[in-house]
Length: 275
Ligand code: NAD
Ligand code: ZN
Image (cartoon, rainbow, N blue to C red; front, side, top):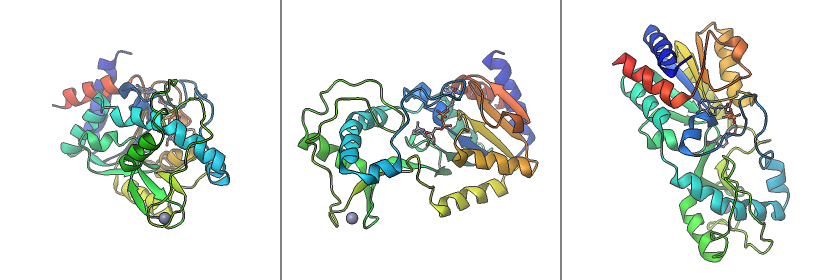
């Protein structure tokens, strides 16, 4: 189907139910140049990302993460919201969206103007101390890492993974950044694989789901339980579920409508159709 047909079908659904719970994944940001983890068949496109246990378990792993993320983060910081982010912000403005629960960590929904955003997996633009829980901006740390390790940012790298990791030569000598309050271990304020989403964040997302009339899941393979659980709960409450994705998702059997296509053009068409 052409994106025009998909856009019309989506617009008709959007008009049918007043309050939408929108769940987004990495596919919403691919048009901004941030690659997704999985392809159309739900398979890994990169090597699996850093796990929480690996990160906290060794300073070597932390050194590896921070040295690669100097480049990876820069790429994400420079990314701009695309048509999908802009269309969702517009839909919120027009009163269709109760909340966006995003699995992305790139801040692009907020930067496009969406206000009711729950960052399920945190934000790459923040860092947290694992010892005293103090949070700070990643940009400050980024400047410090670049200043302390000038040759890092001039290294060549392959296009990074969506979590800010990039594939570069590891520098064993990188000085580990430390918490400026307590000297403790710093971590990006994102939920790594193998880490659990803070309970109050999940509760807040469920509360939004409970207020919604319908669910729209966009650009997510839904292979990760963290996002899948919302679609599952919606299905058990018999809410309408629309899935917009290029390719297969784990929740396809639960969808009341599956739209298979690129999210930017389809959302743009839907917004135009609703005007
Ligand atoms: P995923 O990579 O598992 O799935 C992305 C899906 O989007 C795939 O099915 C793919 O075919 C589809 N897709 C790609 N481009 C598309 C487009 N233009 N239009 C429509 N569909 C498109 O992503 P996920 O389900 O979000 O799970 C990935 C995990 O990785 C999450 O836990 C998330 O936290 C994490 N992740 C995402 C991002 C980000 O910030 N951009 C970053 C880091 C991690
Ligand atoms: Zn600290």
